[in-house]
Length: 272
Ligand SMILES: Cc1cc2nc3c(=O)[nH]c(=O)nc-3n(C[C@H](O)[C@H](O)[C@H](O)COP(=O)(O)OP(=O)(O)OC[C@H]3O[C@@H](n4cnc5c(N)ncnc54)[C@H](O)[C@@H]3O)c2cc1C
Image (cartoon, rainbow, N blue to C red; front, side):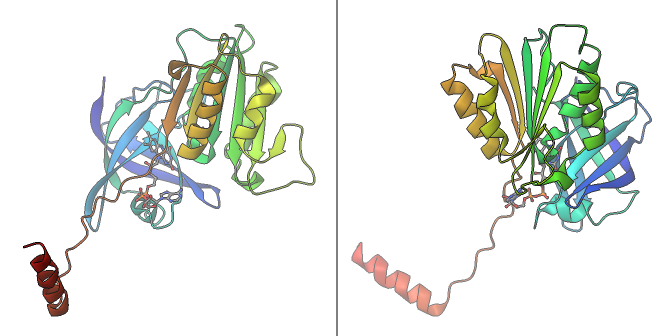
């Protein structure tokens, strides 16, 4: 069931050079009802008025289902309206939120292998999903593979938490791919390049594997294309593209000059 409620920004933390995490509290103090992996729509108000953006909920940890706050992880987009607003605001700003929405969820029937593939802030829905799966890891016969792409090691978001899961569970595999960094001290789980390049090494099997893909739309199309060639059907590959807001501002009509008007009249004559 979707709800609409108001929130106030209570905490801002820097996770990397290009990424902040934001904690918004519900003004009515009620619990945030969501399934791990879902997103909410936020309506913010800047000097030009109201505008809406979607953000995955990145609430994770033990008390994940018992909180009245929403944690977001947001990367800066040059020239982006929400980026300008959120990366320059202070605590206390408000927003109207609706949700939850989305299909990136823990599958009802767990496959033999569940692949979580993310780039950058696309990790957001996977943090609550990993929290939810933690109780199943080690008990049920499910293997979870996280393929996570970032520009560089500095941009490996939630590194501590993800590495802790890796240390704890043998059935959790991490492959961290850096698109803009070649490391001299590469760890066994680290690679240079794109997550797409790593898919083949797992020999994905449509009979036993399921994929959740989140983040950069190009990465998602590339991975989906590869998986389709391997025989995967659309419903075995759940995709959430972090598509950006379209230009909504209608370009102002410029008044035509005298010369332009005369040129148009000349051209129109030809069609008479
Ligand atoms: C379901 C869903 C969930 C999402 N969850 C998250 C999330 O958890 N965290 C998060 O950070 N974002 C998330 N997004 C994206 C988010 O909604 C915004 O689009 C994003 O924050 C950029 O907004 P903006 O207003 O700053 O930029 P916009 O005003 O939307 O974009 C400004 C301009 O920059 C271009 N542009 C935007 N980004 C890029 C880019 N990376 N490279 C090149 N050009 C670009 C656009 O085409 C546009 O012309 C999600 C999107 C969806 C659909």
